[in-house]
Image (cartoon, rainbow, N blue to C red):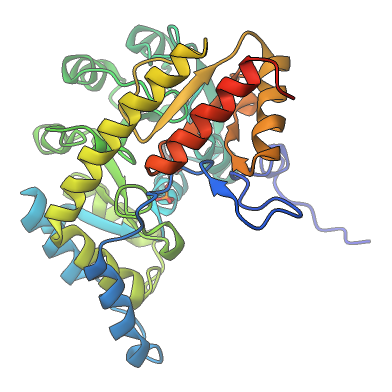
Length: 361
Ligand SMILES: Cc1ncc(COP(=O)(O)O)c(C=O)c1O
């Protein structure tokens, strides 16, 4: 038996459990478990991927300048303040690697995204979890939870899996109130779903202690390619680039992401379709006696009477070929997170929940 031992904090990590993607014996599943774009990526991004077939033997760009320039142009940002990662997960990893470590604390909220804890422990930091208020990030609780060891404070806005968000004034209060040695990380994985919201980009520019992370896995429909990015003060970008591998993002992912971000009409269509279908889905669920908080993202957190009912409903949905997400691991055992699908997907899941509530098993 090997005598080699991993660091103690690594052994505290519970493996990330992703949304189910298949069901044994069922060929035609509707996947509403991972907050993917049901319409897939922009046709321009698909074409860009096809063109990459001829370049697969080439190493990708290591400075990602074409994608950073496109992001800067489209979002009105500074290209030098952008870093790209293999999904925003990798940017979160860079932050924990660079600023975390033994003797430091990484703070997030009770229903916060699972990767904050995983990356904090992997880096050797102590995870600190603070309460939310009725499934909404509570700025006062975060400020009260900060200590002189706090290095990173993570909030997703909109948040996963609750779908709720807090306003810019609250975020500004948070950024102003955290200790001097800490960074506030605004995870904007779902920011594009909120009309007129910049994910906190302007706040990043106004302060020296705020970082924004974004992804191409959600509205841009490129989860399979693993590409995301971060926006931060130059001093932070310089730090993160030290821990980033030179070829961390593939040429295919870079090309697809650039085409996707430039196709603003497609993104806008996806945003509008999601808003319409999300309103329909949450109303249909409510009519069946299943309430949810007003969601600002591409999923709805459906609340059942208790954990037993949520589990039974999930089992019934699976029998109908519908995959949604149990979120007991997020401290929400009585809930199921349902991604907003296309129209047939939304109708199917609402209908099946209705049948379940009417007694079907
Ligand atoms: C809040 C939040 N942040 C980050 C991510 C990571 O996204 P990716 O690594 O695919 O960019 C997700 C994915 O589900 C998420 O929900």
